[in-house]
Image (cartoon, rainbow, N blue to C red; front, side):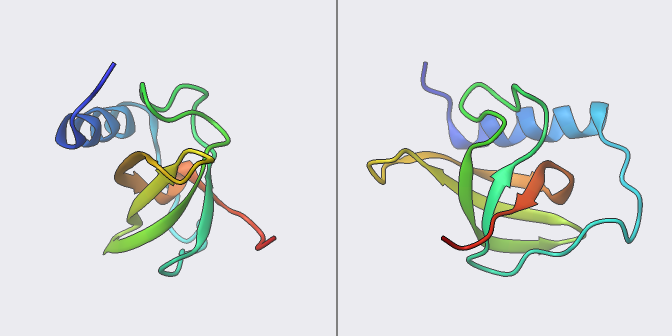
Length: 93
């Protein structure tokens, strides 16, 4: 199943609007190129799941980041805007 980038972003925004209550000051900001893990619901969207690892490629402010998630072979799995409430820091390996 192939989903266009703008459709994925819309799905994520809807999921966030429905399920996230953000507590101000509770999150740590992510820097550009930070390695992150999807720590949200088990099925975040059709293409992305709990535990998937990606990199922050854009900071939109107000706790929203563009993150690129890739398959092990390096191909892009998903690139979408993700609120920080769905992300966890990953220690560099």
